[in-house]
Each structure stands twice: as structure tokens, then as C-alpha cells.
Length: 381
Image (cartoon, rainbow, N blue to C red):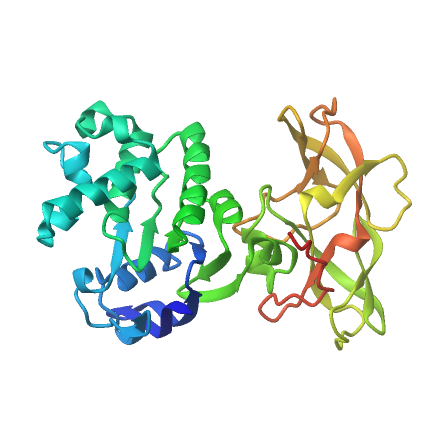
């Protein structure tokens, strides 16, 4: 059953078009995470669902009911904000039950709802405290508990973990995922943190300049990006992009090369008309690059190490590649990034030879950066 449906949602602020024909269907019980760069429209879209922002055109349906012009309190939603928005003079229990009190629900119903939410969030021993007595993580649980007590049709989260430190964010990611599994509720979550998106989402919605670039499961988007933007946005470290030229094509494969990059053959998703010398963008994720001794192999690059990051279980190398031209983009670093799954004693300025895994390469067309290389296999988890 479709829990939330957006039909051709447009939102303009004068001449600025913030949302451009957004279509999205969210099934009951899904955990949808919206990601994208600052200003892409993800928070604006969430606010239009909540009714905090009016839409210029389109329809918003919740459980089949058109709520496009309904007041926030009439939409069957509950929203958790980046700021906890707790009343400092109220206890935890009073904060959690505030929405139900405003709706003039019976006291017994309010108490039962607060007790249930507190058990789910494991804060039953905090109910008589006030917000100033709580840690950041506990305050966020109270804010979530206030949403749970309302038993909404759809939960909306607007970057709820961004105010927490790294350890608490990790803990709260686990708790939110567990909460979703326990409640079986429909959740729409906005974040700029792709780790949150990759670890929590049933499906990810990637937004860019008011448009949906791609919708899919975390692994689908990571393995099968539709275009250069999605490929560069998801992944940490980000995908490397290199300027290459077509050497020759044969059926559903193309051989490409560039100054500083030995020729390498890439399989195509479908036959594509590419003439010799055509310029393309080659994408390769950092974990698909290895350090080798022999530079004569296909897909080899020579370079010097600019920076080494030793992360304990892995090593990240930033390599200035000789003669290789990287594609300038917001997600690029201007060099080749390599992620090694082992501790390696590399040093700055050390010469290295890199080899690209030919089975894990992506090719992007010059017309909008659409992906033209083979779809990669997705592990069925």
C-alpha cells in the first residue's frame, strides 16, 4: 500500500524554482532517505510534505488522502527537527505528551502513549527530568518520543543527528534503524550524511537542483548510478573521474585511454555509437584501484603520493597522477584517491604505480554524464 505519494510537486520562490516536478511513491513501512548537496531542495521537499511550506503546484497524498492544502496538524504526520525543540520548563513526560494534550486527548491515553514510547526508546528512567539534565542523545530520543506518541501515518526527520558528536550519531543510527524495524512505520529522513543514507535507508532519493536524479536501494545506487552526479555523490572516499578518449569499439565494449593511462577495455550496458577519439569520463571507485609493481598492465597509472591517511584497518592514498587529467567536480579532489584495505607503510612523495580494476569501471557520456558502462551485479542481501 502506498503510504505517501508526491505528484508533480513544484515549489517556487519568485523566479527561483526550488522543486521541479517531483514524483515519488513511498510504500507503507519504507524508510526513505533524501540526500543531496546543500540547496538541492531536500529540506524544502520535507517541509512541503509536513505542510510547513505550501506548494506552487502538484499533489501530496498520505494514505490516499489529498493533503496538499491541509494544515500540518491535519496531515497525519509527525516531524523531528535538527534542533530538539523541547520545552525547558517541562519534564520529559510532559514534552513527549504535549502534542496529545494540545489535541485534548484523555489523560489515560496520554500516559499510556508516553509510557509506550519511553519503553521503546529506553528512557523510562528519565521521564521526570527536564531537558537541561539530559545528554544530546537523550534529548533527541525525547524529540523522537514526542513524535511516536502521536502515532502518525508518516514520520518526517530533518537532519536529526547533525547536532550530535560522531559516537552518538553512530549510536542513534542504530537506534533509529531498530525503531523503524519495531514500529514498521513509514519514515522519510533528510540528511547530508551519506553514511546515514547508506546504512539506514530502504531506498535513497538523490536530489540535485530541485530534481530527483535517481531512486533506489543503497547498494543499487552505489553499484549502478544512473549518471555522473549520483556516482560522485555516493561513496566515501568519492569516485575518481578521469578524462579519457575512445581508441576503438567492438560490439558492447570500448577501449579507452588517456595521457598517463594505459589503454583499458570497458564493457557497455548497451551498444552505443562512439567514434574514435570521442571524449568520455571514466569513473573508478577508490577501492577498485590497487598498487602494483608493473606499470605495463592495462589501466596502469604512474604517480607520486601527495598525502597518506592511516586509518588503522585501511590506508587512503591521494596520488598526483602523471599526465592524467582528472575531471573537475564538486566531489573530486584533483588527484586519484586510492583506498587500500590494509595497513601500508607509504610515504609522501613516494612514486607508485596504480592499476584500475577493469571489471569495476564506469563510463559516462558527455551529454549530461549519463552512465553507459555495464550494470554491475548487486548482492541480494
